[in-house]
Amino acid sequence: NTNHTSEAENEAAFKTILTRHLNAVTDRDTLALKTTLSHNGTMEFIQPKAATRYNVANFMEMQAACFQKPNWSFETKIESMAVSENLGVASTEIIYSESDSDR
Image 1 (cartoon, helix red, strand yellow):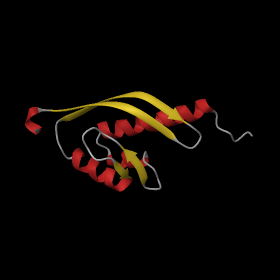
Image 2 (cartoon, helix red, strand yellow):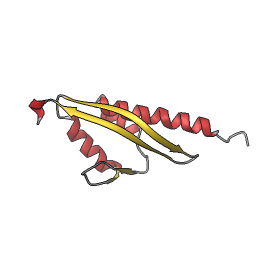
Image 3 (cartoon, rainbow, N blue to C red):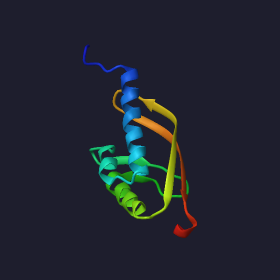
Image 4 (cartoon, rainbow, N blue to C red):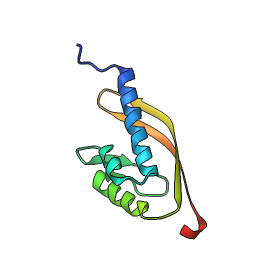
Protein backbone atom coordinates (compact mmCIF):
# COMPACT_ATOMS: atom_id res chain seq x y z
CA ASN A 1 0.00 0.00 0.00
CA THR A 2 1.71 3.20 -1.17
CA ASN A 3 -0.49 5.37 1.09
CA HIS A 4 0.88 3.77 4.26
CA THR A 5 2.94 6.17 6.37
CA SER A 6 6.06 4.65 7.89
CA GLU A 7 6.63 4.52 11.62
CA ALA A 8 9.56 6.94 11.24
CA GLU A 9 7.39 9.41 9.29
CA ASN A 10 4.64 9.23 11.93
CA GLU A 11 7.15 9.80 14.72
CA ALA A 12 8.75 12.75 12.89
CA ALA A 13 5.35 14.35 12.20
CA PHE A 14 4.27 13.88 15.82
CA LYS A 15 7.51 15.38 17.16
CA THR A 16 7.09 18.37 14.80
CA ILE A 17 3.57 19.06 16.10
CA LEU A 18 4.60 18.49 19.72
CA THR A 19 7.51 20.91 19.34
CA ARG A 20 5.17 23.45 17.71
CA HIS A 21 2.78 22.98 20.65
CA LEU A 22 5.48 23.50 23.28
CA ASN A 23 6.85 26.54 21.43
CA ALA A 24 3.35 28.04 21.23
CA VAL A 25 3.09 27.86 25.03
CA THR A 26 6.56 29.34 25.46
CA ASP A 27 5.67 32.13 23.02
CA ARG A 28 2.17 32.62 24.53
CA ASP A 29 0.68 32.17 21.07
CA THR A 30 -2.94 31.13 21.54
CA LEU A 31 -3.68 30.76 17.83
CA ALA A 32 -0.65 28.55 17.17
CA LEU A 33 -1.41 26.49 20.28
CA LYS A 34 -4.99 25.76 19.20
CA THR A 35 -3.77 24.43 15.82
CA THR A 36 -1.78 21.73 17.66
CA LEU A 37 -4.77 20.37 19.59
CA SER A 38 -7.36 17.76 18.74
CA HIS A 39 -9.91 18.95 16.18
CA ASN A 40 -12.63 16.86 17.83
CA GLY A 41 -12.30 18.80 21.10
CA THR A 42 -10.99 15.99 23.29
CA MET A 43 -7.62 15.74 24.96
CA GLU A 44 -6.01 14.67 28.21
CA PHE A 45 -3.76 17.15 30.01
CA ILE A 46 -2.16 15.86 33.20
CA GLN A 47 -0.06 17.93 35.54
CA PRO A 48 1.00 17.48 39.17
CA LYS A 49 -1.27 18.82 41.91
CA ALA A 50 -4.00 19.85 39.47
CA ALA A 51 -7.14 18.36 38.02
CA THR A 52 -6.72 16.52 34.73
CA ARG A 53 -8.28 18.44 31.83
CA TYR A 54 -10.15 16.42 29.22
CA ASN A 55 -11.25 18.95 26.65
CA VAL A 56 -9.64 21.51 24.41
CA ALA A 57 -11.94 24.39 25.41
CA ASN A 58 -11.12 23.97 29.10
CA PHE A 59 -7.40 23.69 28.35
CA MET A 60 -7.45 26.80 26.14
CA GLU A 61 -9.30 28.75 28.83
CA MET A 62 -6.61 27.80 31.36
CA GLN A 63 -3.82 28.71 28.94
CA ALA A 64 -5.36 32.08 28.04
CA ALA A 65 -5.43 33.00 31.74
CA CYS A 66 -1.85 31.82 32.18
CA PHE A 67 -0.67 33.75 29.12
CA GLN A 68 -1.89 36.98 30.75
CA LYS A 69 0.59 36.64 33.61
CA PRO A 70 3.83 38.53 32.95
CA ASN A 71 7.39 37.43 33.67
CA TRP A 72 7.22 33.66 33.55
CA SER A 73 9.42 31.30 31.64
CA PHE A 74 8.85 27.80 30.38
CA GLU A 75 11.55 25.28 29.48
CA THR A 76 10.66 21.92 27.99
CA LYS A 77 12.19 18.54 27.36
CA ILE A 78 10.50 15.65 25.56
CA GLU A 79 11.12 12.64 27.81
CA SER A 80 9.39 9.95 25.77
CA MET A 81 7.02 9.44 22.85
CA ALA A 82 4.87 6.55 21.68
CA VAL A 83 3.47 7.01 18.20
CA SER A 84 1.21 4.88 16.06
CA GLU A 85 -0.59 5.59 12.80
CA ASN A 86 -3.54 7.26 14.57
CA LEU A 87 -2.29 8.26 18.03
CA GLY A 88 0.69 9.89 19.65
CA VAL A 89 1.41 10.15 23.37
CA ALA A 90 4.30 12.01 24.96
CA SER A 91 5.70 12.70 28.40
CA THR A 92 7.42 16.03 28.74
CA GLU A 93 9.37 17.69 31.49
CA ILE A 94 8.30 21.28 31.96
CA ILE A 95 10.31 23.68 34.06
CA TYR A 96 8.10 26.64 34.83
CA SER A 97 9.41 29.63 36.73
CA GLU A 98 8.18 33.10 37.48
CA SER A 99 9.77 36.17 38.93
CA ASP A 100 9.15 37.09 42.57
CA SER A 101 6.99 40.04 41.51
CA ASP A 102 4.45 37.62 39.97
CA ARG A 103 3.80 35.55 43.08
